[in-house]
Image (cartoon, rainbow, N blue to C red; front, side, top):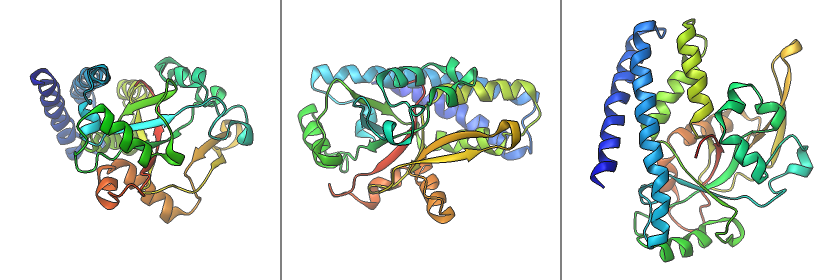
Length: 269
């Protein structure tokens, strides 16, 4: 556990440096790149260790991501979640999930061609950290999941970044998306291609299916798909905020009636 804490300490320190630079400058400059690179490096080390904790299942123990309320769980049955209804480009198959884990597909701009759009998942609610064993986790998951889903070989576990990191990523990915520094844009694209993160969030079932949207203009116009998007600006903005501050979803609905639905931009997990 001490080793895991050190990864977190390193991440917190480099995160702090990036926040300070972002807050005091209108645009990312060359001198800021090293701080962002250090943050990305520390994040990847922390994330790799976070992912390795899934091995604790074999010891009837739970990963820290479950105990902290950062774990999303998806039942990924072949052909599920609207593949046939919205078009074959929206890939929810095992092949599509494997493709999402490969950053090169995003760096090569294959997201739309391969249909690697965000997918719906459950944000597991540890009920105030009362779940301690694998058996307790499985039983509570059955209560919280849609239609009492069972854990199986097709279940996908993906832990989320801390909300503090999501706020940093929001700054780098959206606020600074038009910054002119080329080295930053290369780094920014690499980070976007590698980091799994929530897209939309809700403290209950979103009650909506996949929506087909058109983005861009002229020759850059592309069809895209969005799950959980209503077209109502107020609702959609609230769902974006809930994705960044997803820990608040837990506090709003602790009963098993709350499905805590979230959509995830699956990347490396």
